[in-house]
View 1 (cartoon, rainbow, N blue to C red):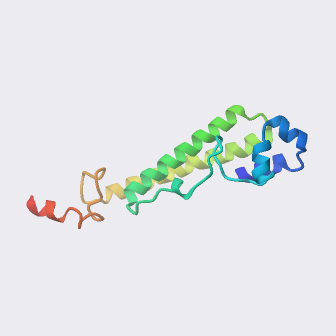
View 2 (cartoon, rainbow, N blue to C red):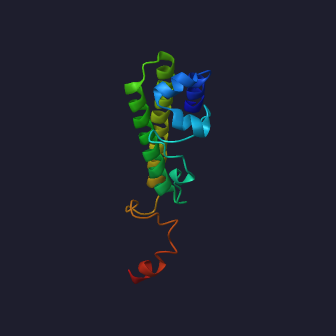
Length: 138
């Protein structure tokens, strides 16, 4: 959606407008195409998508990602003065809030079903082989 907004806002932009906005470097590399990058120009990479294969770890990562996205949308809203753009960004922000709530609910359900009270350190059903020798010593 953000890419679509950027495309709509830059559609038909003149060379003069590009230069005045300070986007000539971006234009040289990408024309007005949407190139996923941070506000500082750091390109998107799959490294941003963290997955460990452990549901507890992955849910915490998802919670953090939703909060970071919500903060980004809050920052966009602080600087944006276009009503249509703000409306779309508010929608996306609300979606992040709902995702955060659902991930939190899933984390609670998962932790309620674990066979250990120390679920922040490891998931005993997932890590049994890792801790097999330690568990025998007890």
